Amino acid sequence: MINKLENSKRLYQLKLKQRLPVYKRYLFNDLARSPAKITAVYGSRGIGKTTLLMQLLQDSDLPSQSKLYISCDHASFTDVSLFDFVDEYSKRGGEVIAIDEVHEARNFEQELKSIYDFLDIKVIFTGSSALHLTSPDFSRRYSMYHLHPLSFREYLELVLNIKLDSYQFDEIYSHHEELASAIIQSLPNKKPLKYFDEFIDIGSYPFYFEDQYKYTDRIIETINTILHTDLSKIFSIQPDKIDTLKKLLLTICVSKPLELSIEKLAAKVGITKSTLYKYISYLHDAELIRHITHEGKRFAAIRKPDKLYLANTNLFNALCINSDIGTKRETFFASMLEVGHTLHYVQKGDFLINEKYTVEIGGKNKGYGQIKDIPDAFIAVDGIETGFANKIPLWLFGFLY
Image 1 (cartoon, rainbow, N blue to C red):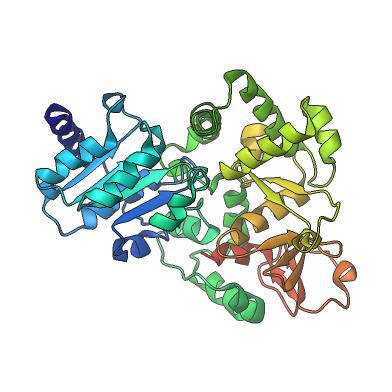
Image 2 (image 1 turned 30 degrees about the vertical axis):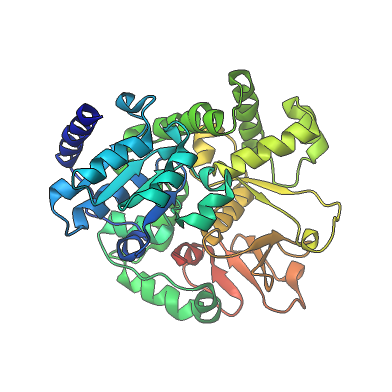
């Protein structure tokens, strides 16, 4: 174990020599201030969890010999007891350890529990977005943080090297005209729609800024890794079923959210309804799709179809050539409201937000017909820079986090 510890320290020093992005994601300050003994950061692959770990270690005031980064998907950690390793590190002066890809470790849930129960060391670990659902111990025992893909606000900060504020939903709803005008004035060329069009295609994953020309290829690689590695390992999915998951993703990409019933979708993909529901749950947990139910299902077993979206708009170009602009708009809105809000779909309008607000999403010619006489209703409009009354620019909802 001592040899493995020394090798891990050497790998950590090599990692420190790599150039670390200056930009810090929206969770950084919360994580840096967290007093929790063990903290979990979960989320989809490719959204910056590893960078966040390294930035937290870099920001720590502890001496370098008292902090360590390891990745459980490295070959040197095959069949290594995570508890024994952390125990050895703690006995030799370790005070904080950042553990990446923890779900790759053998018996990781039991190992983390033992670390929590018996060792005096601060742990920050990352894992698949499906990780937090595998055991109730995770939400009860550890401080959990969900890192989402880049928001439109974060994308603008990265592209333009400026600082922009985020806003609560109620602020946007009540003061959207003033907020949109202030944001536009802070942009160098005063053209939010130019950047919004870019964001829809390239703005979700930070690795775009590493190699713009290979961006779509990287997304495809990310999807394959989630399917073949994360879901296969966590949910014990057989390799021959992965193609079925890919087919399901493709079908969702080319279809409108309510175009296919569960029966039709199961038939199209070639699986039973019960298996389809299980696969939808897997893909939703892994943040490749978003599963949104009808608001009536909150109260009773109402027989309404569910809406299925890709998790973010950047996935469209990686999965299919032809996609519907209306579906992309709804996908953007749903992805931005994912952080800190509840979302259901409704008969009149597109979504019900926080069990109160009804929104209809559309282009700049969209009228009020579908939400007429509904209280707390508004239209999220694509293609406008600033709104008026109950018409709010769609891009402004990219400033929720």
